[in-house]
Amino acid sequence: MTENLIQIQDLTKVYGAGTIAVHALQGLSANVEQGEFVAIMGPSGSGKSTLMNILGCLDRPTGGSYVLDGEDVSGLSKDRLASVRNRKIGFIFQAYNLLPRLTAVRNVMLPLLYDRRNHLSDAQAVARAASRLEQVGLSDRLHHRPNELSGGQQQRVAIARALINEPSIILADEPTGNLDTRSGQEIMRLLDELHRQGATIVMVTHELDIAENAQRVIYLQDGRIISDRTHASGIAHMFNATNEGGR
Image (tube, rainbow, N blue to C red; front, side):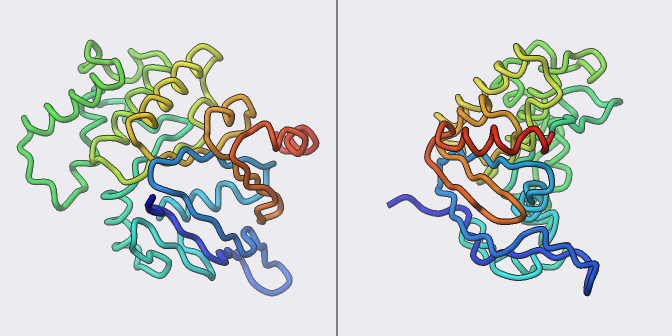
């Protein structure tokens, strides 16, 4: 039986109070199974970023529950959330978020530095980071800094960094948003390969053709799930109707 890595139930998030309260999420319930590739779509203001922040343990919900890999993280302290985040979640950001003064291999090593369970020597950490860079096709770029790499290569470094702690789940926030079409396709082929190898991936995207790489698409609008389908084509009509206003 396939296990649920993510279980959210009646999830809400409210910013502010009284007449200025903003209800960013309004009672979301959904599961993500181990090994699943899920895309989250919706116009600007639909709640995508808020949901990803909560799924990534960067923020806590106002109400409802969030169980990640069997642990209810809904009400954990900031320190406990940081620990869960480092152990169980690999992040891929639109802007790569690489440190410009560090080489590729040192950027990939960064999560190890924040992992209290890590007892690797520097040489062992370098070797692990190098193996992750080899996994994403950058074994010849270990000692290059970000400004010496193309956008696609920088995103590959970011993916290697996301994999370094062998996370339970990969969260990708617009992973092709800063890339040209060819580089974006290369990144999606890499994510597809990681998924075939067993990775669980949740990805936010504005692009329907990118969402088509996922097994399942959850469409948000006004903080609610209005569609949860097993392929992207079924939500094309909603996407076309609302996306122009959401860019």
